[in-house]
Image 1 (cartoon, protein in one colour):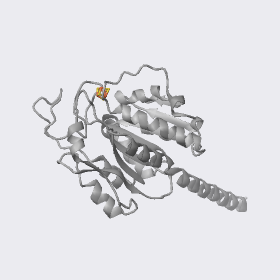
Image 2 (image 1 turned 45 degrees about the horizontal axis):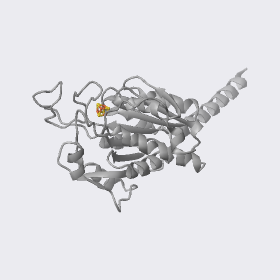
Image 3 (image 1 turned 180 degrees about the vertical axis):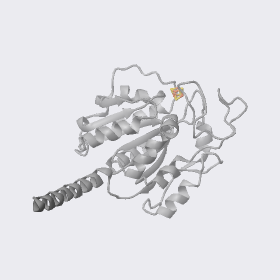
Image 4 (image 1 turned 135 degrees about the horizontal axis):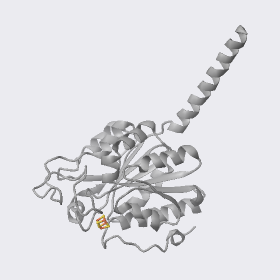
Length: 284
Ligand code: SF4
């Protein structure tokens, strides 16, 4: 499998300069490499996307895919994984998609440690509907629905996922794809719920390239198994202050997945049934 084999003939309608291109151009070589190395067969990959500009990524990658409805990418991805645990499910969602309408699903997927990968195209604006604020838009954001400036501070999605029990928490940026490729590869190979917030610039309605370029840096000599340090680094930038903005894998731990726990529960139920049946037979 080569990267070019993962392209499609669907006409790309993203705006020139859109950060979605970086995510697309990072995920394709990662999937091709994983297939080539025998780690993840492409026929076992399922991409799930939601509503928003990002959703079209399902059209642009030649792999099994499913367009979900707004805010419901994670439940669809969860259902696919539970129905067939052999599949490798990668969920793409926007910040409006996953942090507004779908926030409860994100929290519960992290809590349950569902073995899927979730990549958020966090452009901090509703781009498809031409520029309204989202949960990660900064205070003062000037958009179609807030012409006098947004008065509400943003959420920090990394802290939310971490506090909910996420076992892999990372942040990427859509300028330059090498770091994105590294993070995506590790996220896909991680066993458990992998969460990657990508600062994906909307070139048309919220162009933050200059702002990010002055502030981002890559985590180095950071041990992602260190919970306290991971939390400290996640708090270094609250999506509102001036930075600096760390990028990379903040936190990673090996923990039992929802599938593991479900199997354990099933065997306990089978055992309980056997004991009840045995007790009843003793009465009869
Ligand atoms: Fe990308 Fe923004 Fe254009 Fe949507 S509106 S395709 S997010 S640049």
